[in-house]
Image: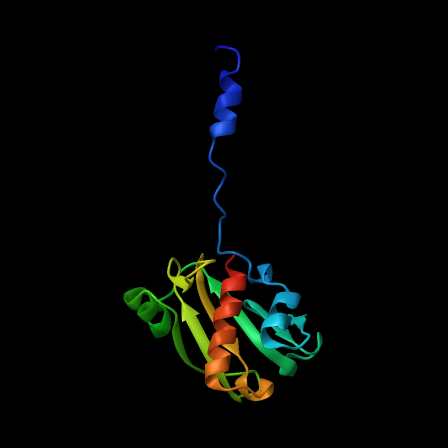
Length: 153
């Protein structure tokens, strides 16, 4: 082996790919709070991440994010996102069964285009509690897209 050969191979080696989807906690409470214009704290959930007004009370949840590696055929919003190559919006319910707005984007699809484009690194579903926040569906859609972009950067 020639001198310096091993060094060149190590430098040129590709970094290891992550095993699963990105962690939705990549989006910080400060970023989420800036988007929804309220201070938030992380709330423990079974799946994904959630932010609300109190750490110990899931009923205060204002935003939830779920990132998964792949979706099933019955996940209609994510399947539609793949077919239409965009973010798909729908209705949902928050933790207290009040109306909420949902944005779903499949892995590889654009979340934001323009000066700072962002693609989804994993299947991403964001739910914004429109009733609790007192915002319209259009405002909640814009918030959900901004939150999805923050979770996928």
